[in-house]
Image (cartoon, helix red, strand yellow):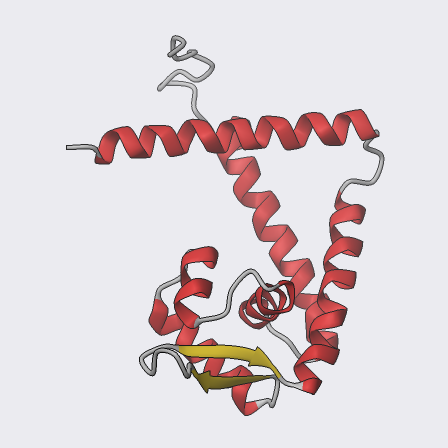
Length: 160
């Protein structure tokens, strides 16, 4: 492993000069704008994500959504209850394993969830206004590298 850089010094760390703070502010601003735009189709920030995951076939159970979205299963269950009450999602007991309850989009859920990636791509592209293709690729690569760094630290810390 390479040496840890010393870009930050304890006596000089300020929110305004912290990459973590900037990433947090970016994530918060992005979530607010997505929430504002998703509300036009009747969805909250918590509701559009499971719809997108179901639409893409990434997840088929509440546990899948909880793992993928990094939420606890109780919170996901409450969101799914609301989506079911809105007529967007239905729960179907698995025929092969009665303990498993699969999730499916209803016809209305299919219709609404089709709008989610459109809104998502519009907002993400607006966020990248003025970026070149090369700059976009660089930012993406650097953020993924930072994520990999922090995940490896977390794994090392958790190891017995």
